[in-house]
Image 1 (cartoon, rainbow, N blue to C red):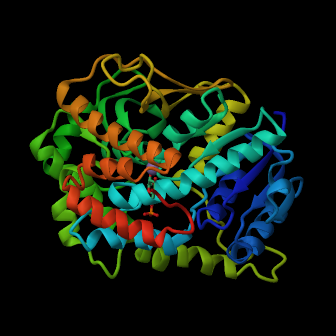
Image 2 (cartoon, helix red, strand yellow):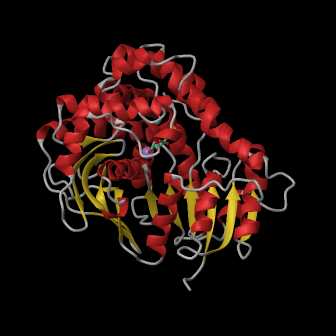
Image 3 (tube, protein in one colour):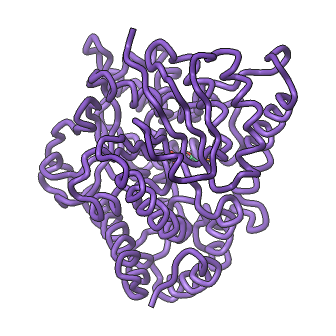
Length: 440
Ligand code: G6P
Ligand code: MN
């Protein structure tokens, strides 16, 4: 049997955690655990899922010790892996991130544009503290980070902790898209191998083959030219996500050489998206009223119960599977293939060496390694240079508390461009984020 581990779930009040617990149960042979520490600073929110998390583990994982805590030291004192998905400021702040930009006709999104900027500033502060705390106890603990915006968090942590090789930033969107490709092509997802390049939430699939070497890319591109692109789990998705997938079709009407990540829509069609958004009801509201409500309702059924009869076991989230498969690949040195976030160095030789890029690669005992990609064409390079400048200026604004750099960051972002609007939205965001960050 494989050696077993201790994990800490940081941000255990996240609505994604019950499905992660289900995945941990499913993977108990592959990634056995002796202890799970659930940690959140919001006891009440974590408490809404505690009875459920405990019941699932008691029924299906009795050998695993379970701890719930709001004490940071208890969370990090002794642990092998931190699975981190904190959302600083929770849905309340996500809602500002999405709504304030819309006042100026700008995209309102949690990870892209001004909203992503504001969220990035909040996340950087909390993530820096977390890494320092974890490292005060151990150099060896792996930090698997899902905290968004991953692009900003990954770049900031790389520059604040340049020698730390055990922080890995993860995004499940390429993974979700590959699942959707597999469904369209009618092949098992495990058999598909992609070539991909870009920045996080800003990249392109450029090749898709199966393990036998058969090329599926042409077939997929042809399909996307005249069929709606749908996520593999379309029946569980809200309208805004279905629209998001369809904008891949829209992009490909102009440029069909590569397949973009769904997030490219915000940079290609910002005005159209802002115009279609409802400033009184954004994705934060939709997520709270749909996914979060379903999870909380399902978890409420577990209160006072001794067994799972009639209680659904939540599993199969893309996020949960990705986290556990990455941890497994590290723990047992499997070098499995993933789309990873790594410092560029020479992977794309004609792009910024210090950028954190998203490419196909492997994950094993030494962390993530990107496969060498080669030079990228000018169009993509140009788009990525601008986006990287936005990311780097955001990190600089955070580290230097520098207002001017923040203004530059927003102005260079394709969803903003106009410095007058950049300033107006920056001032609004700064006002509501006072308890998290402030710039001079
Ligand atoms: C995808 C992205 C994540 C993001 C999530 C938002 O999975 O890769 O970075 O957090 O979508 O989902 P939501 O349903 O909360 O809008
Ligand atoms: Mn993501």
